[in-house]
Amino acid sequence: MQRPLNCMAPALFLATGLVLAQPQGGTIAKPTVNVSVRLDGHFLVITLTNLRTTVLNIDEAWLPRGGRYNMRIEAIEARLQEGRPIHATSPLDDSPPGPTIALNPGDSKAGRINLRERFPDLVEKLKYNDVVLLWYYGFQLLKDDRTEAFAGSLVVPKR
Image (cartoon, rainbow, N blue to C red; front, top):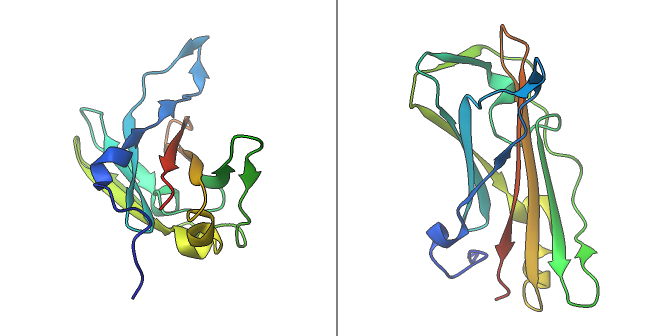
């Protein structure tokens, strides 16, 4: 039986990303989505929520599931003297272009990434140190060719 990475309530690990929306006309465009990231056992759950008052059309390949070109996750062993990156398996899976997904205003889609598969040494490292997860999620909006990107971090406490 696999044990979850943390014993604390998942709500403690909620992190909302910083928007890095592409400038339009010299100003930062208002984000059209919210991205939140949390731990659920040994999974990183990424949720995309439509903030628009209209339908958001997005290619299925850009949903937050850990695609090589839209999701990046790094894990660093949090040590006082020197933080060390934790070896990751091959890059996250690619999703081929797929159908267009329509997200109505306020609707959300979530993706899950198995951290034990991505970082095989993670459970062992958590016996001795906290681990910092750094994440980046970006996608291109259909039709207006605008890119939205989000980044953040969260700490997985040592067990």
